[in-house]
Amino acid sequence: MPEARATVSPGLHGFHGGLDVEPRKAPACDRPIGEMPLVDEYVLPLHMHIGAPAIPVVSVGDHVRRGQLLARPDDFISAAIHAPTSGVIKAIEPRGLPHPGGLSAQSIVLAADGEDRAADPFPPWPDYEDKSPVEIRSRLREAGIVGLGGAVFPTAVKLATANPGGVETLVLNGAECEPYISCDDRLMQEAPETIIRGAQMMLHAVGAARCLIGIEDNKPRAVEALQAVIDRLAAEENEDRFAIKVVPSIYPAGGEKQLIRTLTGIEVPRNRHVTDYQLLCLNVGTVANSWHAVVEGRALTERVVTVTGGGVAEPQNFRVRIGTPMAKVIEAAGGYTEGVDRLLMGGPMMGFALHEDEVPVVKATNCLLAMRPVDRDPAPAPQPCIRCSRCSEACPADLLPQQLYWYARAQQFDRSHDYHLFDCIECGVCSAVCPSHIPLVQYFRHAKTEIWSAEREKAKAEHARRRFEFHNERIERQKAEREAALAKKRAAVKAAQEKAAAEDADGDKAGGKAAKPEGEEKSTAAMSIEAARARAKARKARVQRGEASSDAPPANGEASDSPERPGGSS
Ligand code: SF4
Ligand code: SF4
Image (cartoon, rainbow, N blue to C red):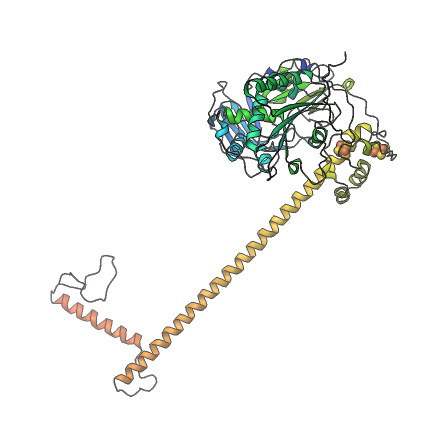
């Protein structure tokens, strides 16, 4: 049965390339969002966002509550992590990540106590309009809000780095163009008011004048639900800043630059950001969670995940706590069907195959797609490139994939830069249209990984070089300081000796004595010793005569040659 469609809005603009793909959203998008039961253990990787890994603020053995801060952002671009339930911190150790390479990373392991007691990390701000943009950004940062459309870029940073000249239009991304994925669709159907209220708050936070909501025409129920809220607010509150734009379902209509182009006609060039055009683009789920954080004082501890594909018994969307093992989420969807041989995180175009299903749901997990061989097109063996240009005609980023492929394959990564590798959004369109079945996007992902890894190594080497130079400089500086101090001391001794010699000479002249031949004059030190001996002899004689001594040792125990002290007994 053909899927129902909403009417495409008039006056839209197209974008270069793209692909007409089968949506395959049903049956998951036809079922309400399900709730997941608590599980025994949650694993929270410290690095599940763009930017620096978070720094743990808890220790093994600590008791925590739901919403309590577990790890703080380590840098400007970083995100906080909070407890998904109450329990005890069981370990902070490397655990498997949802990653195409099957990597592990430092993670906080939380043993749930089953009580799900909540912390109150932040006060709710129903009066958010009294808060400044800085206060709202600070709350979003504290609550660990990141882009939930897949980018996982910290939202507070996105707002802070928006055009200093201001944002005129907020674009809500509800396009959700990738096949199978329907978490945003269900959220728009079930929580339209939260999304619109969240967008109102964002308009306040960035000072924007209007909000455009882009939704693909294959989501008629979402369009209807949001439009109902917009109409009600217009009637009751005179709210007239919102407009829904229904866009054609052409993959990847939900790419940020592609959606901006479709809605506004603005072509954001390479090396520029949409924020340079007084635009800010946010995913509908991000806006809803921003509302929870600011107005209700809730940290980001859960998200909606689509569990779908022919490999699961009962496809559905679930509200899943961050850190839940994926195997438990599959279980909630009725478990695997027979013959399943692949589990992807994300959709078939941009997702990646997982090595195991015990890895946790993270903030970027929008979809778990379980597939059997019959659920996907056969992948014939790649053939040589025939230079047909279909890939460049279809590329929505207007790149030359065949050139990129050539340089990526030859490991000439510098040349990949010249062909704008990092403008590739990894949509997979080029791979899908290639008649030679070359997995182009895989080459581009690999090339990016290699370049990042080389840059990390370079940065590490540079860091080590600077440390070494700093160490050498410090040693040299200390040596120079020591030598200078020694020279100063020597000069002072010499000056004192010269001064003493000059005084001796003056004293001799004043006493009218002729200068004695060298060797006959007693040195000052010898005279001092003779004087000390005479005083000791006199003291001994006084003691023998039984006289009370005024030469008793001082309170600090040091012998003293000083005459009687004021107030001393005698
Ligand atoms: S579509 Fe495939 S065969 Fe055609 S130019 Fe691109 S890489 Fe070569
Ligand atoms: S994967 Fe990259 S190169 Fe290929 S079509 Fe998409 S943006 Fe273009």
